[in-house]
Image (cartoon, rainbow, N blue to C red; front, top):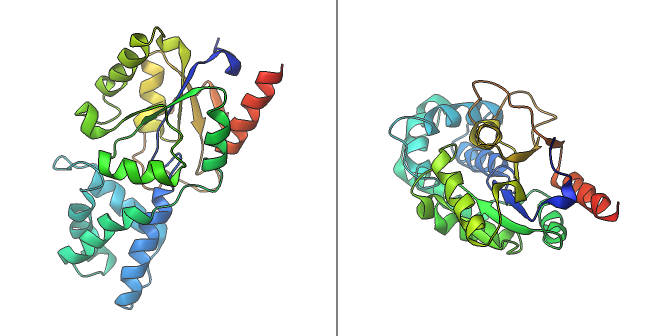
Length: 238
């Protein structure tokens, strides 16, 4: 049986896709390039092509890899396969926005827990995302820090080691994420308590995130960060 929400000491978070709207950022950039060249794009189609290209064997660290991804999928979108547009896709990460409920929810959750960021993004990108989110994190782990990406268990084990170094334990952490593939499945296999934020509950498919081999039932399930925040407030009162 999962711990009660009020019993956790740490909340660990996936960032891109859970707190930062990366799909919205990507589709806006693709649409801008399309308008420049008279091409009308289907956002979901662009995301499906992105997903296929992003998770290839020759992938680089995110979001630097967006240059390669753009060059790989531009012909299929009817866009010019020019490096300058790939660099625009990468550099537009600087303008990616938080989901409307992320900042307020994180500020409130930070009153109850120590918040840990766990992101496959490089440190330079995470620093932009953290600022967009109101600098809520107690500690952060990026692909640059860990030398790996989720769902590699080694990424999670570095977080466990940090918490244990503070006298805590894995059981003190609730892992919060939207990606079944990168976070919910592996956190389940590692014995963590997890919380699925189903950002795409009103949309079909997995969008820009790879589809998991199998669905992992989460311990907690909310459609938004605000719903998680409200639930923790209620748990604190009980």
